[in-house]
Every structure is written in C-alpha cells, then in structure tokens.
Length: 275
Image 1: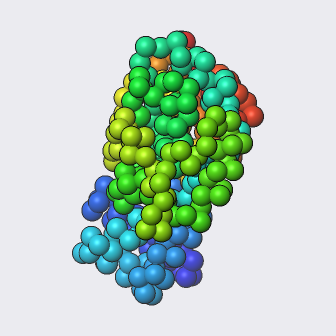
Image 2 (image 1 turned 45 degrees about the vertical axis):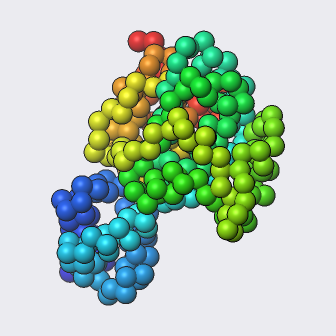
C-alpha cells in the first residue's frame, strides 16, 4: 500500500476520532480542504503523522482546541462584500419592515464581524429594537471573540471602506472606541445578540427566523452535507424568509433548491417559497 493510501486511512480515522471524542463532525467536509488544514495543524503541533495527531487529540483536549482553530476558518470583515449588505439594506429590509418582530440567524459567525455589521445596518434602518440576532459557530474561541467585539486597528480602514460601499448612513467610527491597540465596538450592538454553539453538521433546526446569513461556510462541505445544511435553512425560515449565501455558493444543485426562489441573484440572496 502506498503512502497516499495510508495517509487517507489515517485522516479518516482521525476525523472519526474527533467526532466520537468531541462531537465535531468533519467527516463529510471537502477532503482536499480538510487535509490541507490538518497538515497545517500537524506541523503546528510538531507531530510527524496523522496517527500521532489522532493519539494527541484523544488524550489532550487542549490540543483538540488548537486543531479546531485550523479546521474552522475564521476569516471575515465588517461588511465583507459590500454589495451583499447594500442588497440587504435596499431589497430585503423593506420586506422585513412589515413584521412586528424579527429573528436573524448568522450561521458560522466567526469572530463576529458579520453579526456586528448586520446589527449596525438594522440600527440604521430602525429595526434593531424589534430584532433578535442569533450568532452561531462551532468554534468556542471564535464565539468568545465575537462577544468581546474587539478588532485590531489595522483592519479599520478596510472596515470603513466596506461600510461606506455598503450604503452606511453614518460614520463607522460612531460605533467604536479605540484603546489598548484595538477597536472596541459599542457593546449595545450586542445587546440583542445571542451567541451560541451550533453545528450545521450535527444539530437540528435552530429557531424560526426571518433572515439567515450563512456565507462562505458551505464551500467547505461536500454535496451531502450541503444538502443537510440547506434543508436546515429551509426548515428554520418562515415562509417568504430570506437566505444569504457567499459569492461562490449556490442552491442550484441542492435537492432542496425548489424550496427557494432567487431574490437577488447576483448577491446570492434567496427567498423561501410559500409552499
């Protein structure tokens, strides 16, 4: 048996161990992406094989937490892809304003950039006080960072440019203070945010919501897992609710695509059908 086949067995056993020991299920993620991240984690841990890594994970929860940081990509920005947020503001918000109360789910919230962006947008559109935001992720450290709302100063220029391009009606600086080498975003932006551990891979319907934003998460899933996530979104949305995906994601090949219609095609915003 050649080395590549042996490594393939090792990786599958490692992912099985991670699932059985810690209930994080990456077994059906796109394998090329997972293997690349596992190699990075193995190098960081100073291990020579995936078998050694499996042994380490099973007996050392601290090592497992380090590996999870590699497995769950935490890359985002405030108002990332500004045209997406402009479409939410101009096309989706007018519809949401017809409801007396709202629930918004940011699935795969990373370190909180997107949920803060939506909280700012909803505040500017007069909807914040009647909206409850759910921000979920499988990475506990990311959730804790999101709850703190502190970001490095060198990211502020990009944040500000995105905010303007997304149709911001104020100045982003109105929403944060600086100190101790970071930008601390107004804690009131998080007053109506519930941060929670939730996995699209293993967990059930989260809540009945009006808008789901899950961007650049499903690109790491294989087809079966993508279908599971889309079914979860379908079952979580109210009729006529909205789903926003990342620029490289689509419902086109999902077995649940018929449950949605394209609402803003170019921004990958879909609407849950009535039926």
